[in-house]
Length: 337
Image 1 (cartoon, rainbow, N blue to C red):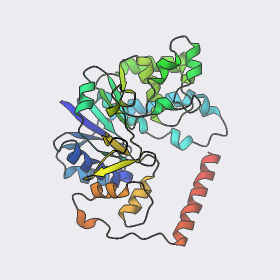
Image 2 (cartoon, rainbow, N blue to C red):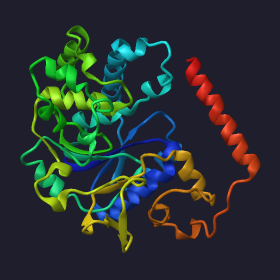
Image 3 (cartoon, rainbow, N blue to C red):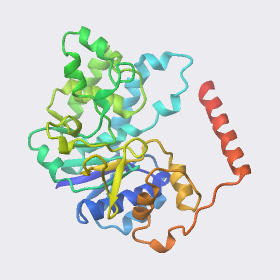
Image 4 (cartoon, rainbow, N blue to C red):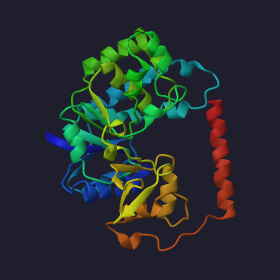
């Protein structure tokens, strides 16, 4: 078992993003750091082929652990109040296997960092690993600033229990696109205890709506009551930066991005608001409007620059119309579901 490694969650649909992430990890974090790809689903032909060319990269294959987390998330969703609302139009999102990233807690590495596949690593992880000496969970995001309405947890409801104050809760709100933790923090026995609290004792109502794994993760980290650190709440201003491609301004220095304000190093850039198809089309030479797309293309084609598009063309009106109609049809299907 390795002392430290990196995880991500991927399949062939996000192949271009996965390659870019792996290249950025090699260049900016360390070329010999082991990386484990957790399967989002069974569409893995291109992923497996890519792994063959990267000796430090493996595929997570303990399906007992994967299925345990799948079942846990599905059981919780089944009793969540939003699941019983007839007009909800997000069923397909609720059923996505994003919770599979939590297999890292019973995975290959004693300490680890997880990156969403739609990210690029921008600096070494020394300061993150150092923080794991004192804390069990490390995050770097601004979720704690969200309004009560949009927060992952129902702050007002939880306050009424007398167990936590709003200050307690807010300091532990976080996303799940980038985090560091330790193996063994959530064992099968502990997950079963959480299941009892959520389902039998009704604490599922603490989860403020349901979007993806992050909402469930927020409940788990709050309820387990282990020490948590968020770089955006650090007393050291040099550690507080942005990370979102379409929201935060960055400067490029030798293909590494830094926070524009003070040129502070960032851990990663997260392309969270763009679809995987946007990146697929971009890599095929379509003129797609993506913030910091040059940086993405640099890392995507780092090992095969001859394949990088030399020019970019806008899609035809027919193509644009077809895509628009497809979006409408999918929206109708979700509404009916």
